[in-house]
Image (cartoon, rainbow, N blue to C red):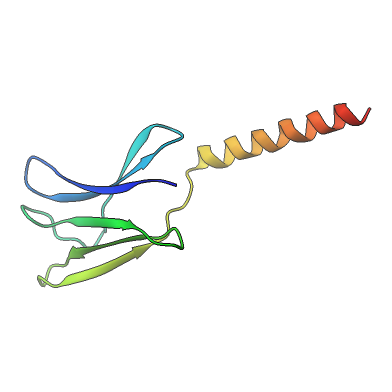
Length: 97
């Protein structure tokens, strides 16, 4: 699971952030409809039981809008899983002979 949080940059704008434990890296999450500027931006509150990001942002009209998003793995994650499956299959084939 990827822990989520929010940070505020030097201009005062909020950004959602995910920390990938396996890759030990951060990924910034900004809703494309969020208004920038001090005190605005995207806020992530957490991850629900369906592994969806939960939070909110303020739009151009000043309304606070709820945010629900499903993170998708990066291509490198798929490559790593594929490599692991290939190694497991090769190991099993060698064990059978």
